[in-house]
Image (cartoon, rainbow, N blue to C red; front, top):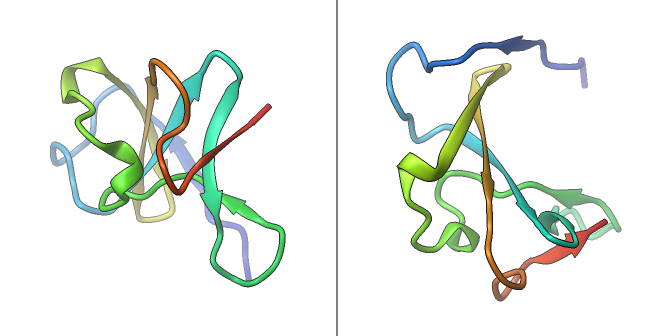
Length: 88
């Protein structure tokens, strides 16, 4: 698999899209979930991931695009939600 290019930006070109990756940071590190490939790889939550819960859009920072996905970062208060863990 070829690496996907990352293009940094301060605003998304088309507003918030359903194709997104979320980098949720908490006091202990980065919130991740199992990549689902049966291995020990981790993945950051996608836009439809229940890990995001009730995250308010105004609390997010736009980072840019990784391939065809928008990338956002946000602070998450408290522990990692069910189905996720903190990698630190």
